[in-house]
Length: 115
Image (tube, rainbow, N blue to C red; front, side, top):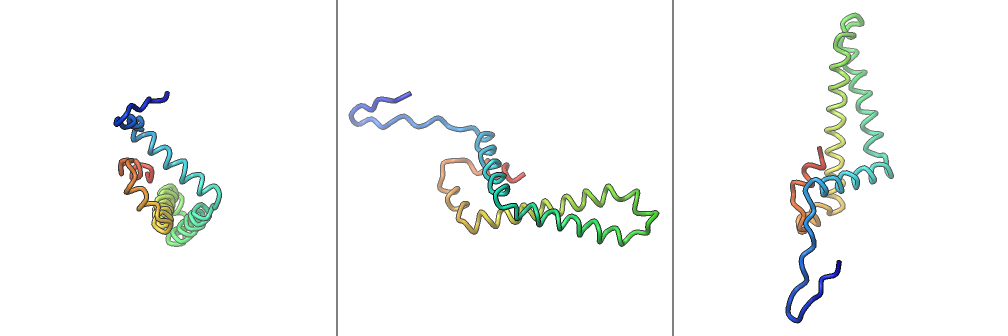
């Protein structure tokens, strides 16, 4: 729909996007970047494997079975923290955060996209 501009009248502002929509755009951008490079995924999997192996050596064979689920969750949480750190580092390195600061989009959308 075109908005006719009369003399001296500015164009109507574009419709505001919701925070959920902006969050989804940021999430798909990050997933697309990761799908192309796969550097974060590979390091996450290797780190999770190392954490599980190191923790499994700390228990005796009979004692490790009941705590194995907890060890897998610890490995998952540590590796996602590492991936989040690498994601923020990529954003800082490429100047995306500076560009995002001057955009009219709310900062909550970027924050929510990281979780």
